[in-house]
Amino acid sequence: MSPCVAYQSPKPCAMTRPPARLSWLLAGLLAIAGWVAGARAETMPDAAAGAAIRQVIERQLAAFRADDGETAFAFASPLIRSQFGTADAFMRMVRTGYPSVYRARQVQFRALAVISGRLVQQVALVGPDGKAGLALYFMEAQADGAWRIDGCTLLDLGEEAA
Image (cartoon, rainbow, N blue to C red; front, side, top):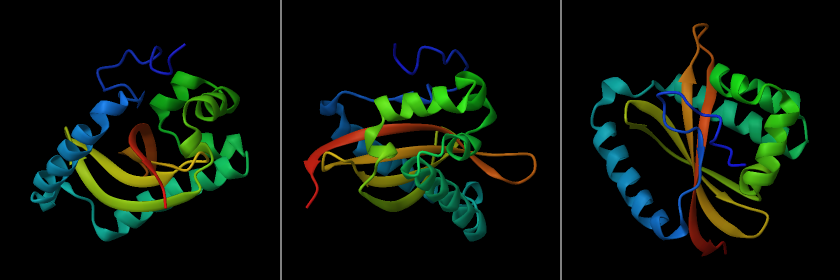
């Protein structure tokens, strides 16, 4: 079963993986979109919010490394939490569908961007297989000011990491 089957909301699917051929095209388009969105500084968060976003992603990645499903699940948005229901179901999906996120060997934070009105943190990853990828973390501000992860799209860059 595809991890996207459960997503029937007007938002784009929270977990998708495009064919490898499209990865370079998508990465280029996202870079252009990020550059255009970056020109509109009023839509970008301030430095403190950017640091908070990075911390949320770092803490979730640390929870994955520690097999701490409850903590990893706590950083998911309410929509993601409602779609998966339990930390166990969420972890099962990440383990099987997103091994480069679940067991990232290397992590490098790239630019924040606004894509289709949604705030996206770009993160370069090297998975356990040594392949490089780009994770696009869709972020959502909560009413209390906290940030939560509202989905992740992986782009396979089709290259071995050095």
